[in-house]
Length: 337
Length: 132
Image (cartoon, rainbow over all chains, first blue to last red; front, side, top):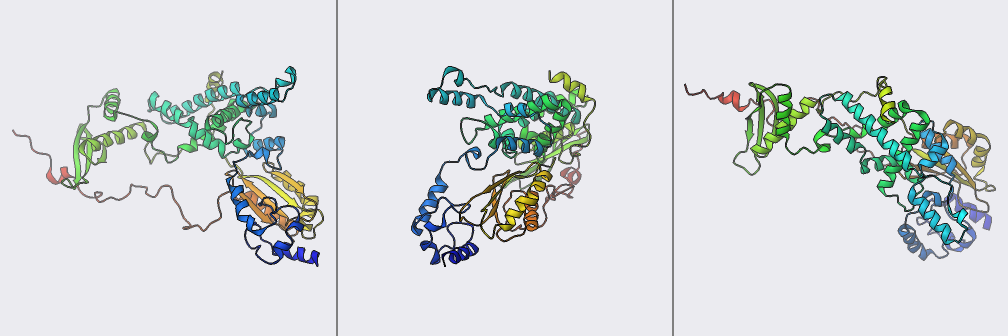
């Protein structure tokens, strides 16, 4: 009867701990059930403790994945290299995940445990050098990409785009979604974004050492450039005086200064007017922009004109991911040194 | 490039229970082939002895979702199919999709606003003639 009851219970039992254990079989066989359900904590003997223990489990501080059961670091690192479809040399990759804060905390822990001086010093190298090399390569490569794709964009614009793509939030977001947080060796958990950024750049540096600049360039292109989809140029690049910038650009191309004129206006005497200001050069329209006040509309028109001049409009051709640029290979090799 | 969203699969089953027979057959026959075909998924096999809870296949995804699938009284082929299904999913929650279509570029020629196709002031009023 006990066996039969247990089998019945197993067939009828749902996955989650709290739901559906209200049948009479639950409490009597509680201690006899042995190990826990898959998602629940150790089995409570009393049904009325269930809610409290579930609350405790939800409020417990987050734990690293490496401290939970079923974790094999070597297998995880191999799976990471397959997931990203790149051939890494595994020791370089393992060094890339080691952070300086981890080494310090480990040495402090060993010293506290009272080990001898030789045992205290860890044999691990940290990822600072790899991170720096990865950052330099990524910035150089992305700069070249943008100069090739948008030749009209000035140096400050390219720098703003590259800074945005190598900024902490973006890189740590990409790293989180590539499971780098589980693989990093770091002192605190959850891993702070600058550590994630450094680890990801170190991974890029390790790839650079293992596979060479071409493959690393394709890697950087595949993971960073899609983050620009849907973003507008002036969201990324803060321009204080677009009219002044536009005047400089036009003088470079020997076009006369733009003349702003109101093209359309709506609701002038209301609280929410809309003015469309068009910029005309030699009586030919350059750009048109809307705004709440005349000044705002003129500034917006200047921004639209700049977007058209730099070729970064919303209806530009999407990024060309087809072929790796052969001509850049030599320059990449020079820039990464 | 394509990054498989499934991080790891944990196969938790009991070595003696009757409903874990499919799981045991899967481990003996098909688990190695599955692991070889999917080198970017880490497969953990952890038999837990003694009368335990139902055998379960736990899938962890890159965005942190953990999904448990019961494999009690399933055959080995069904478990292989289930595992491939989990491997091809992303970790997004399985909820009702409100609309079966989505677009990032809702407008190609520019969205209509009340002033499109209206002649501008200049064509209505014309440029003022300069006083001669």
